[in-house]
Amino acid sequence: MSEVKNKPARTPKEEFIELFWTILWALVIAMILRTLLFQPFHIPTGSMYPQLKVGDYLISSKYSYGYSHYSLPLSPKLFSGRIFDKQPKRGDIVVFKWPGDNKTDYIKRVIGLPGDRVQMKNGRLWLNDKLVPFEVSGEEVYTDARGNKTIATRVRETLPNGKSYITWDFRRTVYDDTFVETVPDGYYYMMGDNRDHSVDSRDWGMVKAENLVGRAEIVLLSVNKNFSLFKPWTWFNFRKRGFVSLRSSV
Image (cartoon, one colour):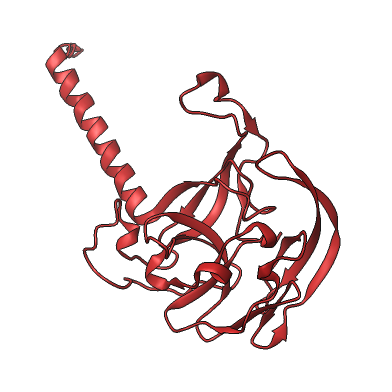
């Protein structure tokens, strides 16, 4: 019967080296995932309400539309254009760099593709000179960031590709009537679902394809407004809203 030999205990130095390599590999894997596959984002405003709420943390897929230098951490301009470029679909919810500074992350819905003619008339969306089908589906109470309550009309729009979603209509605004705009090649027309509380392509223009960062996939979790990473007693103050798919119609 063979004698079982006990392995010698590892020295503190060996344990430190093993821990070091474990942490290093974990960081490398996280960096690869963060750079090439997925990226988390936090929703700070109500411009995409009711689909996205203030406090939502979502995951975007960075591979959905290919890669630009904005896909890289800190956005170093190592190349121009997009690699493995793939066009978004109408109705996709997209994270992109705001064209006003090419730095700030914005999130809106793709309304117009290259070549499309986009216009708002009397608060209703027109695409390529045709009214986008809509259905008024009741009213809800909306509470803004200051706690003010307003009655909102729920309007379901259905884009030509069948993508359906809810927008909110409050009152007459300057964005309810716009000129016809033709989307140039290599650009996209973005709008928020909370139409009267969204500053979007109706205001600051269209978004370059190069500025696209990724497609919003799921709401991972949602926190209340008093949540703070620096206040441990608020860490479990979540809303029951995790794992909401953003690719299906609402």
